Image (cartoon, rainbow, N blue to C red; front, top):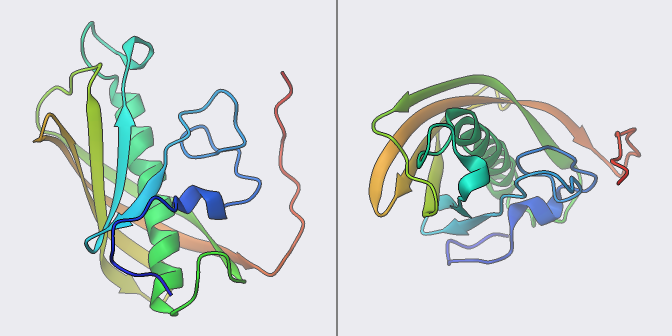
Amino acid sequence: MLSSEPSTDYFQKYMPGNVCFGCGPDNPYGLKIKSYWKDEWCVCDFRTGEKHQGWPGLVCGGIISTLVDCHCMASAMVIAIRNENRSLDSEPRCYFATGTLHIRFIKPTPIKTLLTLKARVTKIRDHRIYTLDCFLSANDETTVEAEVIAFLVSESRNQTQNVTRFSG
């Protein structure tokens, strides 16, 4: 069972074969975000750099959208498992896909700074549709608010999945 204590046991560690650009540890070109549990929030810290900018000095909106999307899908997964009082490495594994991604850019987000995303589930419908609120901050100031709907698309029981692997 998961606790609400701060953790560095990243959610993405429990997503085997994940080649997603944003959260996939198996994608050598991706962002490789790492989400963890802290004080009833799912949290992700991500340091931006010049390669993440849109306009000079500002984080690209597409990168921000990817961070929010991937962090919320991982958060939905961990909440689903937590609600069943199971450990993250237990079967079946839960896989979520984005239903909607409603992002409000409050102010520009600067590059070369640590971004913090905080997400939590606000509603669960039919045990499969999760609504999450997500907040992104830079320098302790909220720059983005989002509401995300995540669909539970499958639960696997040690199933082998065909996934595209990257070759370098």
